[in-house]
Each structure stands twice: as C-alpha cells, then as structure tokens.
Image (cartoon, rainbow, N blue to C red; front, side, top):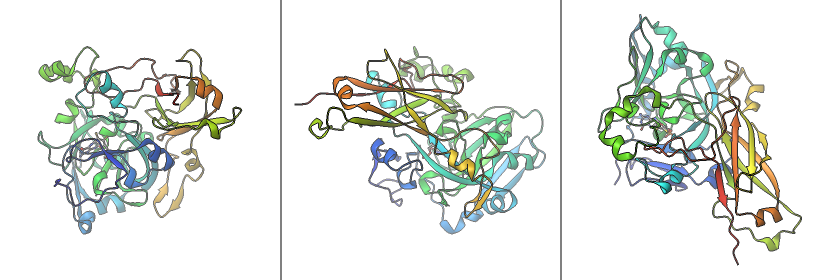
Length: 402
Ligand code: MTE
C-alpha cells in the first residue's frame, strides 16, 4: 500500500503518477463544473513524498520556527499565529507549473509527468499575512531572501524554496501563512496544519506542512528549489539538464509569477455533439478558464476556428470581484479581505457563443488570452526540459463522425 493510505481521496481525482507519492487532478469537466471555488476533495494535489501525519488534536501546538537575519528570532505555534495577528481570508487560485505538461510530453518527453489542463484549483484561504509576521521578527541587513521549509521527508532533504524579502514584506502581494481552506482546517494533502500561500506565483512556491522560515542573504539551496521549478532554455534537453548541473544555478531561469494561460472546458476533448439535436441556426456556448500571474488581470480572451488567422472576443467574468464588494466584512472565516491589494489572484471564466454550423465546419477551436501587461499566450509551444509553464494557444480538435 501507499505510505499515506490513511488519507481518504475522492475517486474523481485522476492519479497522474504511480501509487506513491500522490499526484492528481480532476477531469477538466469536473473541475470547471464545480465552479469558481474548487471543493477541497477535487483540489489538485502535488506531493513530492509521503504526507506528514499530524494528529488533529495537536494542530494548535504545531511550531513554526523563524530565524536567520532578524532581531527577534522566534518560534510561533499555530495558536500564536491565530491569536496574535490579524486573521484574513482571501480567494486564491493555485496553479502547478506543470499544468498542461501533457501537450509538451507528446512532442518530447520532459523530466516531468503528464498534467492535463486541470493542474489548478481555487479556494478561500484563511491565515495571517506573512508580511506582518516578518515585521514581528524585524529582518536585519543584509537579508535579501526568505527561505521556507516543509516537514515532508524527501530523498534529497526537505521541500524548500525562497522568496525575495522585498516581495515577502509587501502586504499587497498577500502571501499568507494559512491553516484553513474553504473554511475548514487544511486537508492533509494540502499542508495540514500550516502552509504558505503565495498568490500569483506557481504552486511550487506555496510550501505545505510549513515548519521553518529563515531570513537569509542567499536564496534557498533546497534540491527542489534548484532542480525543479525552472524553465531551462529550449536547447537543454533532459539528458543535458541532468548531466550538466550548472544550468540549474542560473537565477535567470527561475519561475516566480505565472504567465497568462487559458483552456477550453466545453467542448471537452471527448465530447460528442449530436447535430440532429441542434437546428442549424443554433448556437453552441464555448466555455473555459483563463488566468495570469503576479496579480495581473486577464484583459482579453480570444477564440479562433481558422488556426489563428482571425480571432473573436469572448466574454470574461471575474467571480473574484464579488469578494471585493464584501471586503472588510467579518465572517466565520475571519476577515474577508481584498482591500490590502488591488491585485487579482484567481482564475476568471469566459464564454463564447458560436454558431453550430461554424463549429461543425471547423477542424479545431482555439483560445488564447492577454494580461494587463499585454503579455499574450504564444502561438508556439516553448518546450523545455522540466516541462513547465506550457501556455501556447489551447486547442480542441473537432472531428466529423459518421
Ligand atoms: N510543499 C511541500 N512541503 N512538499 C511538496 O511536495 N509541492 C509543491 C507545493 N508545496 C510541495 C509543497 C507544488 S510543486 C505545488 S504545485 C503545490 O504545493 C501543490 O499544492 P496542493 O497539493 O495543495 O494543490
């Protein structure tokens, strides 16, 4: 059996790797169908090792050590975090850097396993601002980075990564030390009892089972910080990436913020449309999601059915904006708070009404989006050794059957 056989898991989560560790995504149909917030049992899971077993009753006593270049190094329990700092709740979409890697692996196998387009999920995360906890310990010169370490035991040491101190101190970036998801304690797979949540950056930065924070001159030296979560130049294939380790140490290849990306959820890749049920003048509604990184908004979503020769504007909805209206309201989750930041940290949805006749006559439908910084999803795939950040135009083939 698997090392974490004690964890019940929803059968609708599709396993992406062997028995252990657990890595899974919901089918895009189920994920999209679940709506803006992903129920915790359908939330994608990316574990590098066995899930640390923590007794439910001991969660309050969980200790987080904060040390390194600071005037007041300290150890805070989860109870300290909950009682000594302002508790906030914000909606955040987490996205695995490997989302859509399957398409890259079809071209050439990368170092990573296949993800469809369901390697992302959205939840309300409750916790305290990392920036406030950092102010509490008074970082001192010449600190430049904040290193985060989880408590899972991996073959090459614990899971760890780091952030620039200047970003971590910026309350507007809304990094959280979080213990609850969708109003309930974190599930074991999602970091129970405490995790970091880094909105707008790849999911790999949101360290689960958080144990230790170190303020440092150097960035994290953890194995997964260096030998993962990077987009190496295209000519560096998996063999060279493995053999010539120096490639990894170039800080220019690090991934922080997500890039603009989108996908079509309807029609689904395997959906069968029965034309006899649809009059020729009927419309078919294409649907899907889009997101961008760094708190930037998606500023347009476009659809093409002629291989990118022409594009049509889809309608965008931002369910996240509903939460701006209730900002500062107190709830059972603590303070719903989006007012510290004008940034957008969640996926948005789009729809496009297309004539059934046009849909039937086309070979494929495609979607692409642009973000507020005018960054556009690329026409071509940027294949890379780790198989990360795939965001070329997403397409669904249309086949005529019968
Ligand atoms: N933190 C620890 N301690 N161990 C891990 O394996 N995986 C990371 C990140 N934090 C990981 C971790 C990666 S690669 C991603 S994409 C997210 O957690 C996934 O978060 P989720 O499983 O809650 O969706």
